Amino acid sequence: MPAAHETRQQRQQAIRQILASQPVSKQSELVRLLRERGIAATQSSVSRDLRQLGIAKLGSAWAETATDAPADNPPPPDDFVRGVAAAGPHLTVIRTAIGAASRVGVFLDRSGWPEIVGTISGDDTIFVATASAAQQRRLIARIRAHFEF
Image 1 (cartoon, rainbow, N blue to C red):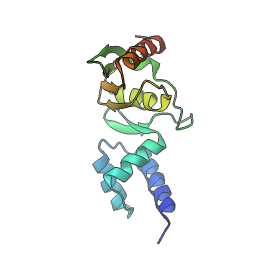
Image 2 (cartoon, rainbow, N blue to C red; image 1 turned 135 degrees about the vertical axis):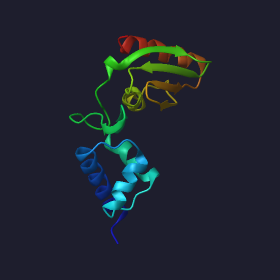
Image 3 (tube, one colour; image 1 turned 90 degrees about the vertical axis):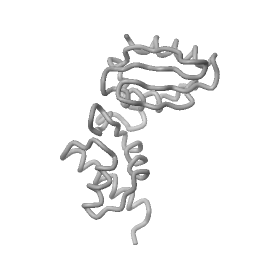
Image 4 (cartoon, rainbow, N blue to C red; image 1 turned 180 degrees about the vertical axis):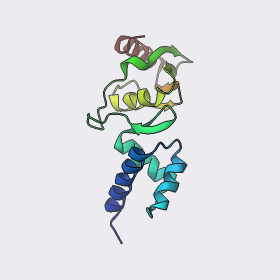
């Protein structure tokens, strides 16, 4: 029986091969394709693998977000942010170009910005949680200064 890290490495290698050879729009589809190759996978393991590999949903398919950069520091997606607004004292809403929210969300998750507690990305919208209203104000100022929109 292979060690857990060997299984993970095989699964991650297969994920890259699959995504390089065909568009995949859902994690459940990726799980099915892995199983067809004889590789054990669950939605949660695939989700972790995608995050570790720096792969995010861009538009309607999964793709690597930064192929020439280290996975923990993808290039900033400066051209995709369209606006930012407060939604209550702890929630910030960021609007992006259609299909770009996941890429911007990955950037925010990896940015290390202390104001960010967590993010949820949709297709063109990101919800960013902050611990306080003061942190939210700092985050909005940082986003406006960092992204050109």
